[in-house]
Structures are given as C-alpha cells and as structure tokens.
Amino acid sequence: MSENQGTLDPSTLGVSVDLVHLPIQIGLEAYKEVYMEVSGACGYENFMRIGDGARLETAATPEKGASRVTFARDRLTFQEEGAGIGSDLLVRRMEEVVRALSRKVQIPVIIARTRNHRTLIRVPGDGVAAQWLADKALQFDEESCAPLGRPVRASGLRLQLPARNNGEAMHLLRVEEWLKNPKMLFVEDNATWRQPLPLDQFSNIANELKSAEELMVVRIPDWLSHL
Image (cartoon, rainbow, N blue to C red; front, side):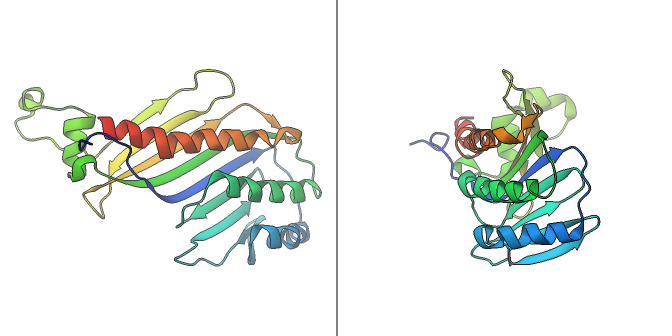
C-alpha cells in the first residue's frame, strides 16, 4: 500500500445534532420530569437550568467523554464529546428524550436537522498538514505560485457538497491544519436536512445520521488518502 492509498483512520473529537422545531413553552418542572424519565436509559446524571430551558448531562470522564442534551425554546441539541460514539447509541438517546418530551408538550414536526462531526486524521504519508494541503489538496506548484514571489502553504480548505435529491443533506466540509500537531488534519462536516419531518416518522432520522456518519468516517478519509 502506497502512502496515498488506503483508508485513513479518523479519531472523533465530538458529534452534535440539532433538532429544530417550532417554538414551545414548557416549564422547569416538565423538564425535570423528562430528566427523571430518561436518566436511566440515557445515562444522564446531572440536571441544570439553562436560561429558559434546561440541560441533562453525564459526568465527563477521559474514558467515556461527555454526553448532554440541551433544551431551548426552538430546538434540542444533543452533544457527544471526547469519545467515539456511533449513530446507533446517539439515536437511541434522541428517541428516548423526544418521546418523553412529546408527552409533555406537542411537537408535531421537526423543521430541520443538523449534524456536526469533528475528527482528527493523520496527514497521508505522515507529512506536514500545511504543505500537504498546498501540494496535494490544492495542487499548487512552483510555477503557479511564481507571481506571489514566495512559497505557499495552505491553512485549510472549505467545500460544499450539495444534496443530489430531495431528502439528502447538504454538507459543508472543512479540512484544516490542526495547530496542536502539524501532522494532523482537523476535519469538520456540518450536514443539514431542511425537509420537515413529522414526529411519527422520527425513525427516519436514524438513516439520515448513518448516511452522514458514513461520509465522515469512510468516504472523506478515503478521498483524502487518494489525493
């Protein structure tokens, strides 16, 4: 296997999912009741008030990272930090929380969904990120950069991957040098689904998240390894 072939192994820093809905009014006691219902199944250990909403979270550890869900007036935000987590466990937590919340207040439709996934990937060939981005990703050479009168290194690139058909996500992809280690790439994918999703079709979110996860942990590393 050459240095630019084969799939790279990404290391997840964190995943977050926003479920956007119409604004709702719900009291603190109702949030506490949701916490009592889901804490066992989801592992949430702490409850706190956040502005007009609330947050449920696990105790953060180096081994397991941290998991939390934040309730705001117009959205639910699920966050998994510091430890790798697959979409199956995340979806199970989301289903438990949404089911419990829907028993307290009417949420007929999820207006939009976003999924943010941040990873670290070692530079193919164990090179330096800024130089690899310039030479391989952007394909700058000495001739094309001659008018600048000096060498060129790249700090990163941003790409848009539009949806090909209804129901697909639009992806915004960021690939940058990770400042803590010049041999690592920081890769972030922000996927957005803008088609309304009735709550009785919530199970479809599992397929959406799996598709975005495959892009981030399989397709993007494979693409980078072949540049």
